[in-house]
Image (tube, rainbow, N blue to C red; front, side):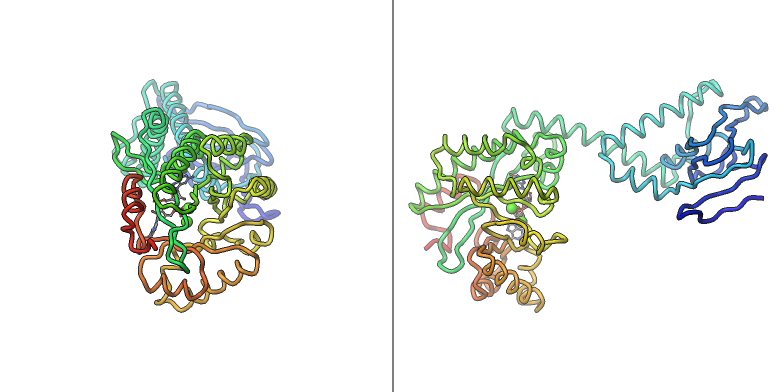
Length: 410
Ligand code: C2E
Ligand code: CA
Ligand code: CA
């Protein structure tokens, strides 16, 4: 007889002495932590029962099958009356899923090795999954995850080479003063042309670069390259411009970042106020550090814009806590202008709010004239999007600026 139920908020299970907790070949639905009593782990070799281990209070067991989705490779029997805390598949998988993908792969590889070693020791043969086991969803998922992690490691080393081999390039998208029609500045958007993979979208490789700190040398290159471009664009346009640069949280955390930025901008003979740093709401998560960083950087005269505004969870709180120059209304709001009446009210509210807090607004993702007109009428100062221009390579921007061929160049 055994009981299972809630105990102090946790799922517990009582098992009487001599009873099975699970048998070899059972599905691995739960892992267990021994709270009281003693558990024996055993298997059958050459038709004879063999005890593999005797586990005591505080030990977890049964977790392997939970993670790799295979059936139990041994049986667990209560040696005495035992009290167990049940660990569910969801509890474990939630954590495994949110772990770094490389760590996850290492976990799976070590688990496979451990299973195989155990099989050699017990049965004198490697663990060969049966054809049926190979086709189960957990086995398929596991192989897919391992493949993904291996690919990520490959991509990481390719990313290292990409810096040395100059495989990155910047595209520049004009930011227009909606009220006058003049170009106010550009946003630098990075591209990676990998010789083996082709074009890779920034949202994919920037996340990887951030998790490996490769974003630091990449970020320095972006500052230098876009700074040079800014000088050339100004010379062609004959009017002051700014350059917006996207900054990842890892760069904010880097103590030498501000120093490096100041040095580079000085070398390029650019005014600090011509550089606008675009940061994402989620970078403000480490609030104390970010608050100090924004203060320091603005004191030096650089501009700071909050990117993708409205898509995070505590946008209004951020506005209260941080002093910023611009907020960038996310394209999801701009896209709904005209068709969804709510988007129009939300854009109006964001523009009024920014004005009250002495910030100006950049609307991104403007794709048609109606959206541009609506935003202009709402008093939005800056706009950016395919309606004006797609992001362009350096040479095309220069030609367009010299020939005043962009439709909005006044
Ligand atoms: P973001 O900063 O929000 O950049 C705007 C994205 O919207 C760009 O995508 C741009 O090409 C796209 N876009 C511009 N106009 C329109 C439009 O009218 N409609 C639509 N649907 N999209 C438009 P992209 O270039 O693929 O960049 C994606 C993200 O990658 C950027 O989002 C930014 O977060 C990140 N990123 C790009 N370059 C850098 C970089 O140098 N450093 C860092 N840390 N992140 C970067
Ligand atoms: Ca941006
Ligand atoms: Ca954005």
